Length: 165
Image (cartoon, rainbow, N blue to C red; front, side):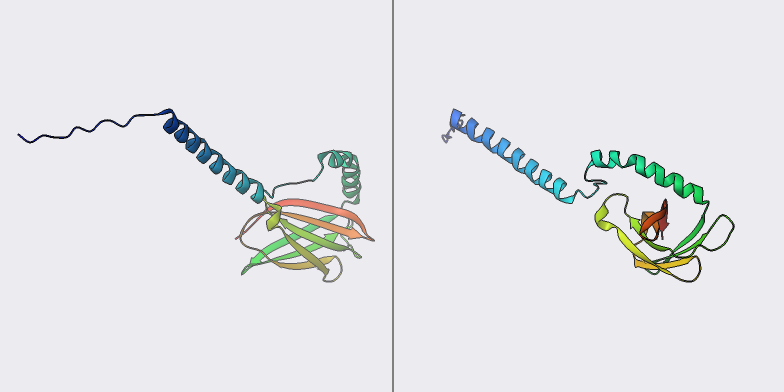
């Protein structure tokens, strides 16, 4: 009968346990470091840099909204997606239905998740009480923010959720 060699089981030493623990926790820390770096480098959803300063401006925002409501303007807008371009047309009429002139304006397509994807729309006058602007923007959900100015002061602001298809 042939003799078989029996192998002696490998002994678990304190040094081996130390290396296994250090390796395990080293891997956990490395993965956490990669995930933290990815999370902090991609965060773009900051709405305001200072909540305290925004809180101080809140009273001014309320007063501005009351002045806007007192104008009784009717602002109609149409946003159309034309092959990757968002075309915005606005008409502004006063309380009597007459076109409001002397306005300059800007609009912004604000991405709901990150400000890095926002698109600014310059509005140009297209006759009495009419403004027009075009910007390249991909399809999706957006917040359309329209600001109309007269003499350097904002007199109208509108925020609405829109979908470009």
